[in-house]
Length: 306
Image (cartoon, rainbow, N blue to C red; front, side):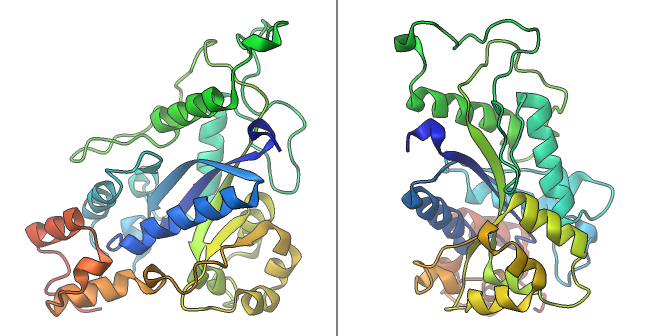
């Protein structure tokens, strides 16, 4: 399978990130590695979307702090970005709404026609001319067509600039949803999807009666799809079989099964907060040093419980 025939993926992770841990970043890296190993996917971007302050979780620090910590955690990454849209809304947003926002944003600013898992697009998903002119990359001389490497570089560059802009550490700005790449950005046909990246704890929450709106679950799992990086040898098959919606769309759930015993699979925000409160030196195993420095400087989590 050539690179342009593979499904191009943006991994989106929603959550409190209270604080963001090495485990969160490891989840992105292992998911990308696993998807590439299948030979069917190319991950071209990752998005971290911290939850709104009104989520109401006990001990949730201000989104201003959580956005900054997330930014510090990914400052050395060339493919994972922090997106502040969810935090900047008037109130808490559902996971389904966040996925739909990023899908619609991609459509508006890049001209993408993003494919749903169950209804792959039969048309070019990137690069339709808006004025009927021939795309720049369309040529009768096949030797002049862009290579897959050039294509991925261009797509990745566009995503970095538009889909999930990395703002200045002290100032988080909105993405310009009316931005237009113009006619210069034209690509070969590729299939692009946004997949929800999560741990097995979120997957298991789908089985809790009344916690999730069933129609939202249908959209999340049925239309977008999920990549799950399990923790603590969790039996994901049991979880999937326990939910009618998960069973219905089990082919849309990709489980990264080769990472269950990795030390990072047991790292959590809860353990990190407890380590900070107790002065436990193991906190360096859970959090990156820039995040630890920011927490100490801002006096976060130190005098709180849970």
